[in-house]
Image (cartoon, rainbow, N blue to C red; front, side):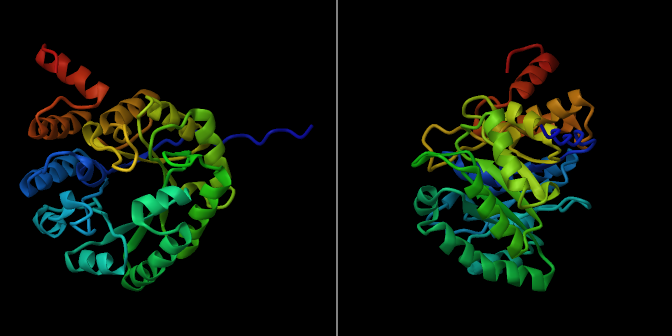
Length: 312
């Protein structure tokens, strides 16, 4: 019997990619004013987050919550050392993003054919071909490209998604020139065992150092899935302040794991994130007040309640 390969040690530092201002707010029911978006992004950057996804240059017909993306980019006070990536669906969106001052972009594909058709009305192969000129243009201009893969564990339309299919899409994005590939459990059905199998399949094709975890908390498994990913050596995770957002194509799917909860986990494990929890709670309190509801983060509720002596 061959000895099992030793697992890498947990990372000493983890990078949190804050996706609340884009992935979170684009799926909120209410329209959030531009000034509030700008203030939220600045709160998040001031907390020490090194990457804050700021906007999406997509069709306002399809994603009306992102119609003011150019104004948001123009209005933010850019903090040295913080990147402000924006989502782009095609070359037209890329060009608009660059004209607005974007220095990092993200493209997105799905590991599920059914989800790809429902989400962007084309096959996985066609979506990848659509992004090729984006990646080429970004490379010429020295702009970093991040890739997203949706439905890496399960799809609301086809059910379970094979890890090998996720690996194939991630490899295509890697070969296209993506500096980092975020693996998204879009509907939050993943468990640590399923996520481990998926990451191992992808890491056989793409270096683990280029992978990130993006876990929704529909079934309350996001933190457990992050821990399982840490155990494999993953060191980049997406998170959304106050647990904002959801998925418009996955009924009942809650938002990404809350940034506050991820930072609390890392602090407890002695893993550095560079994020100041007190300042992060200010951001959570700010956007929750603007939306008129308590934060979706359990940690934020507990710490804010403790600080005020009253339930949040």
